[in-house]
Length: 217
Length: 224
Image (cartoon, helix red, strand yellow):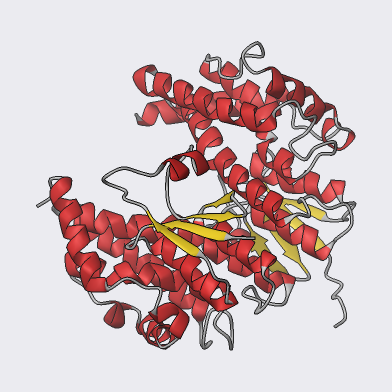
């Protein structure tokens, strides 16, 4: 059954789907969406409520929302398992996935979209979120324990935007949360992650363009 | 590995729809548990111990291990107690259920709650938004008895607040969101839901909900 992904090169949520499919060794067709020029009919039909990427189409049936898509990928292609073995650990992974989804991207967005004093407040909030996630990692190699797993995919994908937040927020992830910086370095050595992430310099340029569009600079 | 015997506790607040979902989920699956009421306006140290990250209810404690977030708890229940499943079996249907449960909370519940906490133009917009979101839910439900099909399931529990709490919010806010004539599918589902034997005997008192949410509305309007 064919697999197609509607994606956008800079989307950290798209990265999640790329990494998950690569971890499972699933081949798929990727369709790049022009989010500013005109979304495809397929995207508008597949995701009429939010009109967002990524969308996974499995045998033409759409699965929406990146975390949902990664759950679906894990359930549909069982090997290797991305979620942890025990029910309780799986639930903790779901909890932190939910936390990451609700907090990280929006806190980061407030940094690069913010004006004046808003930026400082947004930076503090973002660092606070990161500190909580650093606490959740503890002394483990990965969020998945000894092995790179589900929660690592969910979180590492967002890091392609971290240099952007660092630039506009005036901070360094390595100084604020060194354990997270170390974990990121480990993840970037993984082939599935390295080939799925967009160039962070290109992301910075892209965000610069968006700031102009929104009249921030 | 031997199962521990510290049992199952549910820490909740009497009027929270997020707590109700979990309570009903456990009853549907026949899971025995101890309910611990937490006064959310006078929180005990227990809550910050078992849910230091968000400090919210519900929190399930199983064998001494805490787990917050209603949708995550429901998924955990299905994994540990695999009989009487709440979730669909098929992976695609599960993905659909997860998507719509987020829609229920982030769109329907948020906009409906805003009508209670606001007035004038903000309230008018919230009503329009809530109606728009419900139109999508109406279409999703179609003519089925429950979101789960013939039997009540996860998505019914997540959407459940629409059946018994939304009417209270509409009364408190003096607005109409779920007009039975415009939403025949949801109107029928509402009755199926509240008449279900597990739900029916275990709904919070309408008068107590009215008093609570009237007070909440006053508090929120004072802040504006």
